[in-house]
Length: 187
Image (cartoon, rainbow, N blue to C red; front, side, top):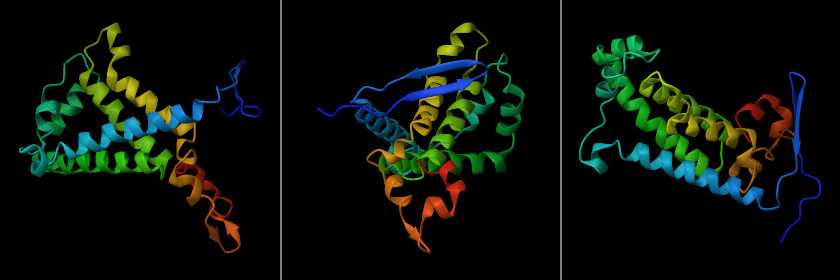
């Protein structure tokens, strides 16, 4: 079994310090979470295609039936009433779910994919909002937080493609050193 002698979690924010040391198996659980969340998104996206599910995806029903207590009910109802926008949404949702799923599974462009997954889950969360305290425990909100945790852990660097993408040489420099802003989408 491997040991963990150097790794440490530490954060200081608003006068509060959090710190701890991850277990030696933490990296394996991060990879497992990445694969599970990737598989969930991949199959959610694929399941929306008519050639797989037998029926095409249509977001209009979800958008038009958002609970009036939701802070986005008016916006989503307006979206549902716009046929052109619905056609665009009906393409974007399954396509991005497939892309997010693949990115998480291979561990490439992970932070970008995790942000996309978190935004999508948060939009679903707001659409499912019913205005009570139990909304804080809705699975879509939990999924959004899990996506952000994968990004925070740099899960693409743990048995993932981002570890290798960051090391690519561009003009005698590692890609991540030459273009430091890529750290925001890789990891």
